[in-house]
Amino acid sequence: RKETGGSSEESCSQCTAGSYCEAEGLTAVTGTCDAGFVCSAGSSRKDPVSGVCPVGHYCEAGVAAAEPCSAGSYNPATGSGAPAACLQCPAGKFCKDAGMSTWSGECCEGYFCALGSSVCKQTICPVGHQCPAESGSAQACPAGTHAPTPGTV
Image (cartoon, rainbow, N blue to C red; front, side, top):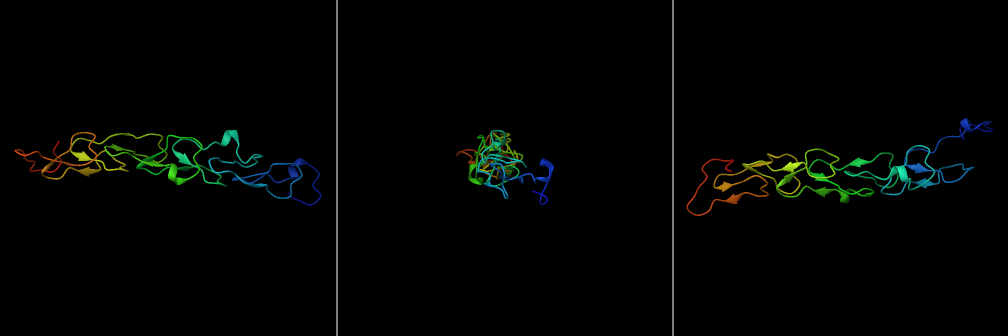
């Protein structure tokens, strides 16, 4: 309630974002929103159907907005409640932006992308090695061959 002795619904305060107000006649919020959900202002449930945490994000308990997984990671699931739900981009792939639900693409020829890469040209292939597209690591040139310059495909 905004004021003592309010005369209408407008004199009641909306439940704050990240929390919920479950019943009528409350003098304080009921509690914080569950992990895996976002409670917008005025929520009446700790797990609102319309507030399921989206793919590419995680939602810790009591949040007013979903937190995107960082570049170099992704999350294909909805309803995730912790940063650990964000998976590192697999070796040989890259995850360019924050909030990805899957990886962006394959590592570029002449480069390799270790686990958690965020660009297709993450690490140039070193001399003496080859890196075809989608390489997760540099591969030594086989006996009888050589690679005198970096970035060999």
